[in-house]
Amino acid sequence: MQSSDEKERKEKYKRIFTKLGFVLFALAAWEFFTRLNSGGSFLVPPVSQMVAAFVRSLLSGELTEHIIFSLYLIGAGIGLGIVFAFFLTALYMISKRVADILDIVISIMHPLPGIALLPIVMLLVGLGAKAIIVIIIHSIIWPVIVNSVTGFKAVPKIQLELGRNIGMGEFKLIYSVMIPNAFPYILSGLKIAWSRSWRALVAAEMVFGASGIIGGLGWFIYKKRYFMEIPEVFAGLLAIIIIGYIVDELVLYRIEKNTVQKWKMSL
Image (cartoon, rainbow, N blue to C red; front, side, top):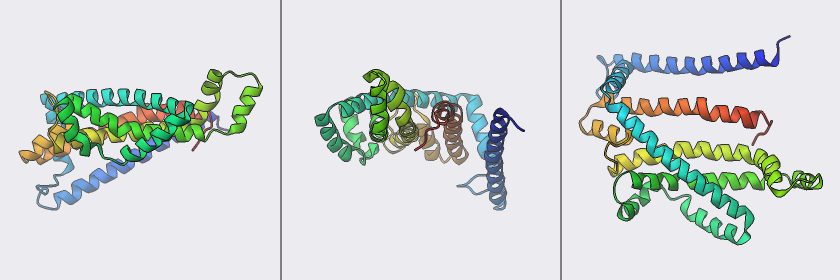
């Protein structure tokens, strides 16, 4: 009989090998079909050229600077956005009047793309990092609030009543009952926030050229496209993919494993 730890370890390795196998197959197919066209299309370079451009840009330090700046912008935007979102969520759950007002605000602002607000934001705070951080905050705050509120509303009332009957105070009830029940929704909101922050960053830098002194990966892709350095454009996209995968596997998945899976919670 296999222990639960051994089964979990085998499932983990199986999941990793499945993903790795798919990625390798996709890259091999990409390389093969682009090489069929006399060494690769101008607009769609082979994987080997893309990887070579990626390594070359990293070693030169150019891509590294843009990656660091992108992570700074996204970190600041997500950090501030999550604080504001959780604060507004708390007010939503506490006050019915605030909830009615926020329902109207969310219905107006949630569907509105951040890129559409960028011209107004640039007039208010100027070009550069501040404008992008504001757009990132706008892009993530609404899905986090919506998912968090949905999660807290989905908490079974019988569990709240049971908690009060056994003597739990309000803070204990929130920490031990409401948050664990609502956390799958909260985590889903955080995942959406992570992906939407990248969209806001890249769109702002590519469409309006709104960047700081260095610029993020969106600015890197924009510059390389302007000078028709197509392998470097794909190198910038590859950097975003790699960062997204690392965060998903090392951060978000571990949070889910140590919370949602551990508590046996699900949407």
